[in-house]
Amino acid sequence: MSEPQSIKVVDAFDLDDELRTLLKPCEMVLDAAKRRHRLPRYFYEIPSHEAAVSIRLTPHFGLNEFTLVDLKEAPRLQEFPRYVPCAVRVLAFYLEEFRKDAGASVHIAVNGGYRSPSHKLSMNATPHMWGTAADIYRMGTTILKGKETIERYNGIAEESSDDFRVLPYGHVTGLNADDHIHLDLGYITVIPREISEDRMEQPQEAKPRFAFEDRRRVERRSPPVHEAPE
Image 1 (tube, rainbow, N blue to C red):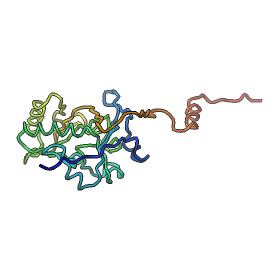
Image 2 (cartoon, helix red, strand yellow):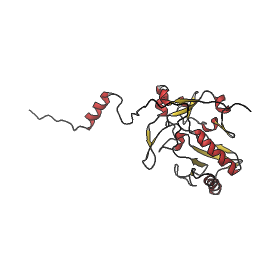
Image 3 (cartoon, one colour):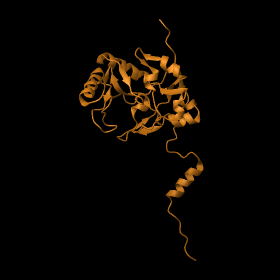
Image 4 (cartoon, rainbow, N blue to C red):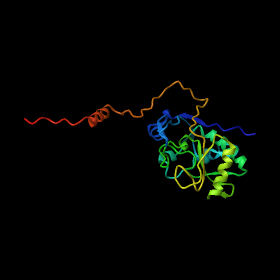
């Protein structure tokens, strides 16, 4: 029996400025209902394409299946090493159960796994940004198109776990799906055993970056001062 492969865990606050800007660790984002959710801080570091292909999260799901993206993802985040939230392992576990209940292999679409907050499809605090959502375009040899097929597999997913949320069949982006099934587990963040939370970082959500920016904000909000004619 082969030894399980280890994956390096990183605190995103320890990454360089560009990566921190793209991954936005611990920043608060709004969902469609205006509820606030804090973005992940802890990530698996994927050193190479070969590692992404070889590392298995469950017997039937490799790490690479959750990181397939196209040019909609920020260019820096398409380079290796790459980063995916640690909660992706939870998603893989649930998908493994769904695969067993469906009796068919699960094929995740490009851009259908993890999407960073900088991804062009990332909006309204989608759970894709937590690594806890999957858009599945094919089950076994069945392409997921049409109401009957999508509703059938949505039903299997809901029977598989009460934790799954699905999107009903329809044509409104973000509310429905007509060419895939969307499964998500909500906003799960994972703190790995390897991490020591002895340092607190405060997200600078609405605070100005420099003092002069604060001054400019005050000036913009203040009514203009008109001098009296002499």
